[in-house]
Length: 226
Figure 1 (cartoon, helix red, strand yellow):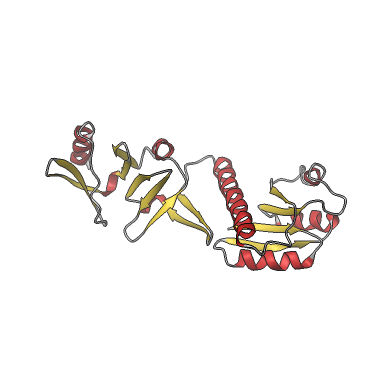
Figure 2: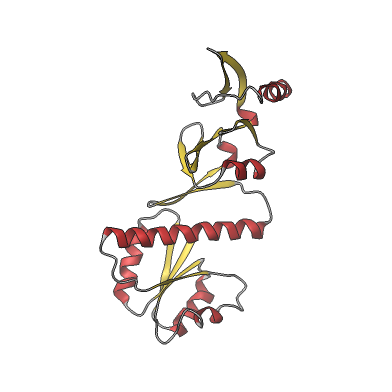
């Protein structure tokens, strides 16, 4: 869960943002601070991951505000917004949602670095909020234009990561079968040929991704060891 605190002296802004956040998965609105003093107290009490702050805000500018929190044991991400009260148009609302989701990615990256361990979940960021899937449930990772599409036994989704980065991080779980695809090692059932193509048969999913001829010997050796 990602906790969000709003710092804005206009209560109506908080009501609107609370409604927006309530419609997003795995994002929690923890309150609104209407002054600098209240903001400091609420940060200490609620330990938010993200602070949405209107600027200018009660004689506090973007340079002085973070100084209140630099002694904290945690490091909330501060997002400075010219206004949080007026986002009635679709484009303004989309811009705010994008800003929140981009910061959520930063929060998850921070958590991974602090844990100093390989991630157990991959995250999906959309206008609906944040969703996650256990890495161990993923059978296939396939490049899809600028993104990567991940396939599990019962779903598929787009993640904003690179195939190369995923291969490096999860080399113990996945093996490359093509320049555009990784498969879970424990999901490979067999390899078959079909009209000149070499295909991987995977557990639980009907997709049969193509195997590069160059990588076929490596895959056959791996399947014989499983």
